[in-house]
Image 1 (cartoon, rainbow over the protein chains, first blue to last red):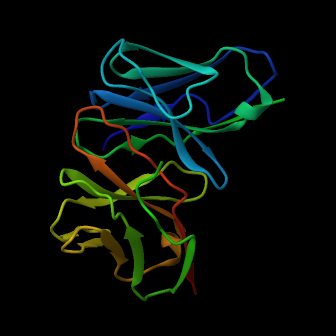
Image 2: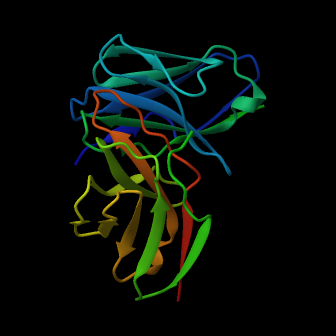
Length: 111
Length: 111
């Protein structure tokens, strides 16, 4: 089974802090994704990457950046966390048309 | 923007078939229909996908209309554990193309 692992299940950070969310997948998938999920809004794509060192903006990239130095790892960075970034963050991976596999999410609270 | 329309919520009696509809009237010829579900506090889980033929696996069946403008996910014998939010998504098979998740349908299986 494909496994997508997110490093933290819960995080609490202060406004202005730099925050790193880490994601690792074990199936050699080309594509990796970061979503955020908020009540009533479904999942919204922040960034995705289709190869090492490649990244593309999704629907809501503002306030975020990403890093993909290795194929199996995709990091989401909040340069200066704000309270409106309090959310559930979901990482996913896929290869070509094979369906996405998701991690169990990181619930981030920014105070 | 999501390319699909789903009812906000549905109820189903335990042991009965759950039929979840999805409209995707602007679907393109190379776009697949995917279904996922999300149980509280977990990441989305892949269920099934199809292009134009009906599909069946151990979890569900997918019925796609001949004009491909709508589809129905069928859970043949719903259990309490099938209570979840179900997402219908359309996506092409282009390399690196992202998924767009809408708000989904909240299915409640009632005892």
